[in-house]
Length: 409
Image (tube, rainbow, N blue to C red; front, side, top):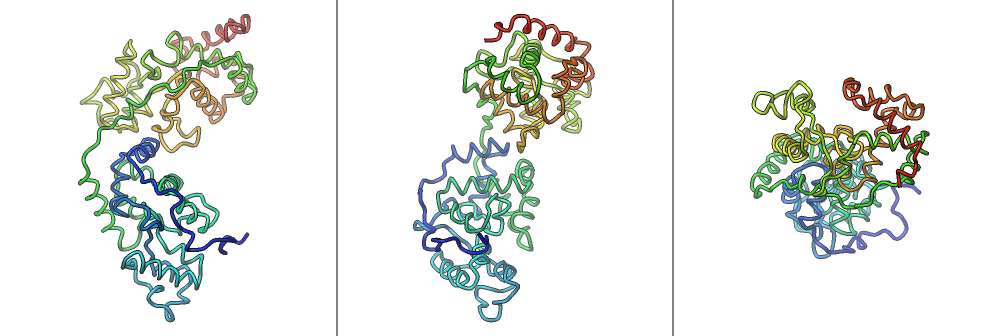
């Protein structure tokens, strides 16, 4: 099917809310947490773009831009229809009724270009960004926008993730974000509007760390190890041995449901360009070590680091049954450590999936398959593996589980 041609049954009149539920803080906060950004960053964009609602009178909230219609049609209608096709970057004014009338006029001339030249919904996501947001055509994009404000939020999330704009929102780099999202001569004014909107919102309390609680209490079973081992091409006992050594007597979760962690001060120092080495040496130090004995103390380290630089802090700790560092979020194709750590905090099976992703991404399946424990430990635990005899402990754990497989339920 030609993606530039309206699909059967598509019409502008059909673009009405299927679900009129308004976006609440829970939905916006969940996306903000996944992306590792301040919820107020999303709220600021909503305030500037639409003041909140994604629909007006049951129809999609829109803004039609004659400049982009002219650009998409090569200026073919500039002379005959200057009101809807011109090289002026100012968006078309007027109320929603007049905007829809102008969109209908443009749609009659070139449907694909008309929808691409329009911004849609609560976040006013431009139709021309449909491919970046993951849609096969602008028609599919617009039909999804008409479903609900929840779908509009999901599309915006997909766009900023695939468009590599998450970092800008994490840093609240409004100029960088505006340059990509708005572009052109309006970008500076748009960035200022976002900054002002953000500053006007009441400050929020970041409760991400307090949300990291176990959601599923099922322990890992032999069948879970067998399934992963089959995909990695190793014995299940080898994977189980790594789990035993990495988590030791602590297991995957603390009694309060938080994942077992180890904070690495040298990682945090490196990720923050050593700017906290002098003021906070217990959590930022060019040298490794300094590990507190208790989980409470280790969580206190993470909390202090999180207050200084949330993303760097999460990347600098290892979590759960397999003690995988948060900096490895890319192994599962995730946008940031917030999303990765949230996954590891859910269940032991999620932690096993993270382990599998790490092994696959770093090419460690062969070492695990061949039980080359020294080679495996060197890469999994770092060059200081021998000091803690990780290779010896893994070999012993493997032999013990192999001799008594019933020890793993």
